Length: 138
Ligand SMILES: [Zn+2]
Image (cartoon, rainbow, N blue to C red; front, side):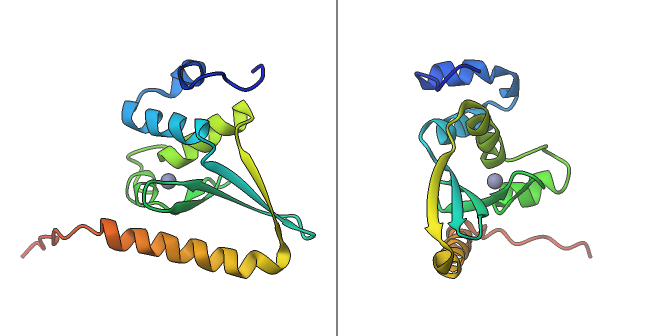
């Protein structure tokens, strides 16, 4: 990898090996290129929280687990249907391209940050909640 990509197309071509799922890949490239992948560093403790700004809300990710707070992760990745959601792919692309945006916070802001993030995640669930009721076997 040499420096930041000049265009989204260049970024996409660098990571073409992940383009198997086109929709997910495009969203991931978008997120990485637009600076939606954020690394929040809390000081002086040095705690780090990663988020990806999504269309409905910010999602909390843990690239080491890996874990993501989005529904796609919950329904597709945990059930083994997919290896990752677009947030985690976006992180990978951003990380390898030097596009992770760093934000610094004071440790005192941690509680407020987390509760804001959590309420954002929960709020997005309200918006996207699927009204279809599950059919139970008799
Ligand atoms: Zn996700």
